[in-house]
Amino acid sequence: MIPTDAFLETAATISAIVLLVSMLIVILRAILGPSMADRVLALDLLTTLAIAFVAIVAVLYGQVVYLDVGIALALVGFLATVAFARFIARGGTENARKVEGDD
Image 1 (cartoon, rainbow, N blue to C red):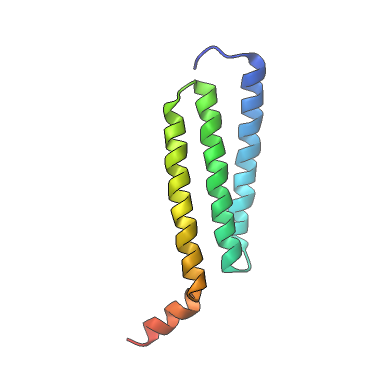
Image 2 (image 1 turned 120 degrees about the vertical axis):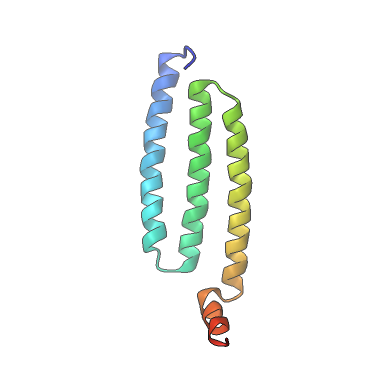
């Protein structure tokens, strides 16, 4: 770890703890969500929180390469959200069950 200001290290540590608690709450929402849209939104928020966590790690360790990981995670999260939105728009699991029953 590069020598950092004590304030920066403390703020980053507190931010990381808050993000981890937020991730646990979002995971709970993804599991218990009453609808498919709630679960997709929770997964999208989880991706955003993970990107923020990667950014905090990049600041703490002073490594710019972690920001590349955050950018890649953002791209994958965007594509996953679009795929889930198309899945829901086409009928979600009800449509998938009808297709499986036709075989």
